Image (cartoon, rainbow over all chains, first blue to last red; front, side, top):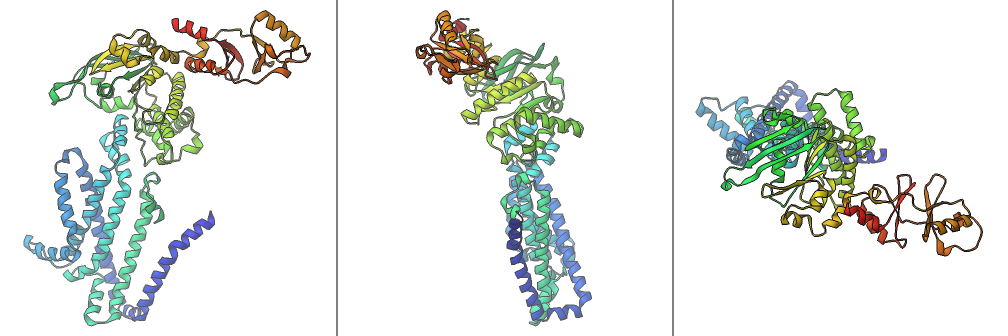
Length: 254
Length: 369
């Protein structure tokens, strides 16, 4: 048993460690370390901005996405949900850079600034909410009719069925949507710099513009590590949120 | 024992579809502790009739009275919590452990934890699943038969006086189905629920029901005990539905014990062969049933194989499997008689103690009534 766990750990840890070693090597090789130490105050400002971008847009996307997805499964919404779904699907097909550009161009039309952190947050949120809506809707819809009938017949209220049966059983699918959204947000967040949203994208784009690998790596490497951190956190939280009875092997291995 | 469930001219008309009456003025009364099997060809309205009792389907006209109370005046949620509900596809909650599944209704009824845990334990024992092994497992880890046992246990958890069962064993393979049916009947002997049991299988209806409610196109065709329905089918439809072999089907309604004769010819295995010869003379049979000092079956001795040898009966006893438990059905009894050479069958209790013997003649007499 212990050897199996050990082997399992090694199998999972070795690729992660190798990746991190490679990234850190790139980091030091191009002198990103020195640049970061020299500009440590700016580094903290950028990294905090980056976390704000990711966490706030993610948080809003989860809250709104799960709520909207759930509402769409209610009986009274039966006619509306295909329409919402179509909008969501189209929205999701717009590329990340396009979403930012749209926010930049559209927000001034309704009297808001197109530049700064708020438009970036709005763009990230809209881009990330689609997979969560879609998966919540699909997840709840896929809960077996028999399970719902048994619950109803046993005298559970609609609210009890939603919170004790539908959402927990849809959780693996919802979690999949959240993972997709996180990947999208973490991947798009560096672009937020382009519309003045701040974050580590500043160093990446500066580095590219100056053809200075050090500055670029000083931005790019933390971005990669943040992506890995978020993915890991999601994996851990899934283990708490998804019941073992509905877990798929994919989550088991994560 | 009073009337527990009473349907009074219950009618269901689905809107549209030409106002066809899915259930048409259905009336019957059920005593407390009875199982009523509702049976009929598909589309006869049996599931609709059942679902009106816990108001999963609304009643168009008529009344359903449970324990003296008109269900139309009760709160739907409370009504459902007081009725056990088992469906064909089981519908266990995949996200919950077996223990949590069974504890659902006690939780809804806000029982305290100790009482709920105790109930879960007792129910798992009742349905023959080891609580320590199964309580913390998830539905996907169980076989279909095990899952349906949990489905039944879950439905009984809130101590409902009434249970509705919608083809509960319909999706289970024949061997396991027979097993679950027998188990349920055993449980029912202990818990004495009033049960509405929907099935499309007339054999199951006969086996499980104290009463059978036979429906056709929403009408009640006959409401009677299985014995009555098999001996006096009301019309050709009923006769057809119960089948041409209805006399044979009646064999399922009786236990071997009911038909057997007491005082079979037995002999203690420690007796001498001389004594055995005397007994053979007296009883004028070819075989004697050998028993030990507790009266338990040890085998059979054959007159033809006796010789002048002196010795003990024990030495000449040949083991036999021509025996059945007292609670086995007469159908099994008849089949067993024909599969052995003795012309009769030994009837024993759970400890293999000899209770009586059974001949084809006894079966005939029982069927005559």
